[in-house]
Image 1 (cartoon, rainbow, N blue to C red):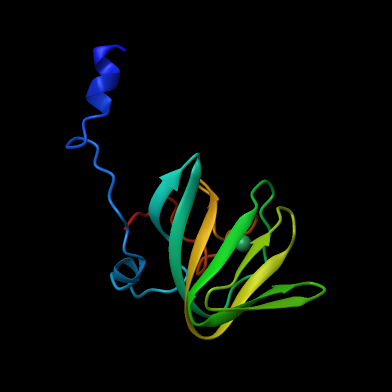
Image 2 (cartoon, rainbow, N blue to C red):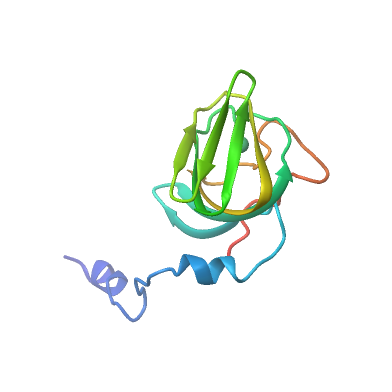
Length: 135
Ligand code: NI
């Protein structure tokens, strides 16, 4: 084993730390602006809060996972609607048009490839969020 690899394994230089999701959600208030809390294998784990209706869009190459942390919301498709409550999750396959709608504020965890645009194929002045925002 070479010395470089041993250096990388030093715990004080590369600590593995837990992430308190509730505390992370308490750090921001704005809606529709996902925050990255972890990265692995080219994917990002993001937290987002929202209330109201998002824009219809699809993601050409990315599947998108939604997990409800607090509250409830629905994912609307052109031909059906999926209601999600706390503790439930849904994977939206790439290429499928969808929009998220929440009657009350909801906290949601998103898992998708790095640099996925939240509005997918749409650029929207209000809803398109900056990419790469960490918290
Ligand atoms: Ni989407």
